[in-house]
Length: 327
Picture 1 (cartoon, rainbow, N blue to C red):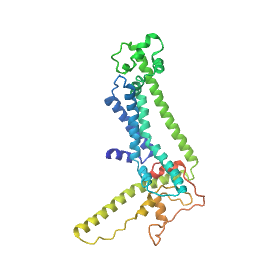
Picture 2: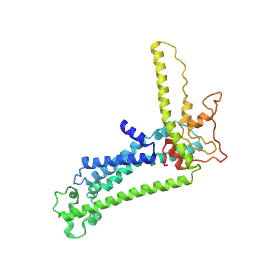
Picture 3: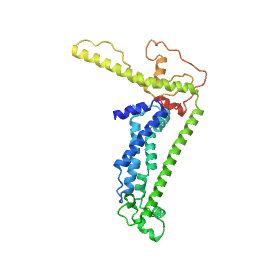
Picture 4: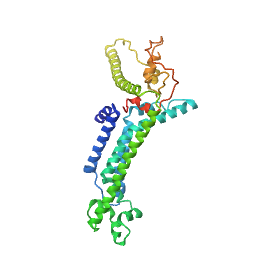
């Protein structure tokens, strides 16, 4: 799990590279399963067996994508314990739905790659479709002639190539037709995923309130902030743990260490919406520049303010929250 997380963290640094790497790893995994694990039973279990290998690993990869996404847990933490007004709950619900859509768009890369590669390979589809027990489909594969009744009755034996008295030419024709159907579905899936991704990105870019270069800068900033906050958190936690242990074992008064309060942590962990009026690039950026970290109002860094009206971010801006950017 740790090794897989390391691969995903590396992949997330660049969207195009990351998506390509995840798809490549998924395709490699499918090839291993298809050649070393999958073995069609050639019985009444064909349909169930084939569909399990086609869909269940995809479901597992989807759930793994949600589990390994930091944004999933950032979104869900404390949701059930918060009390909000009806208006606030509605705003929170819409924001949650938008964030969930962004998370899903990343999590779907691996499962869609698995299904596409599995369909192009054709083994799972062949096994599943020879066990459908649907007369119309069997008739379509074997033909309606009475001489091919045995073909429909023994269709589930075709993937194994043994245990059937149907001529080899007929078996080969049926399997060839199934493999062609599988590959057509695979290419259609690939084309539909790429087309939908292109359309969504075009729509988001067209409605973006900020320029291409600023969006690029924002992605670089979020990537650096995400890396540094993990580093700083680990260092601060280590310093606090060392102080407490030294105080405990040495029986000495603990030295003063300033640690953010729960309210401070909540303010930098909430969902962030970019506004051109303020032009902060994260909740941490907004927290620091608003002087909320010190009762005497900490010195603010120079902010770039704009006379433009405040806008909610289009979909393209949402994935910047995790440093993912299509450049």
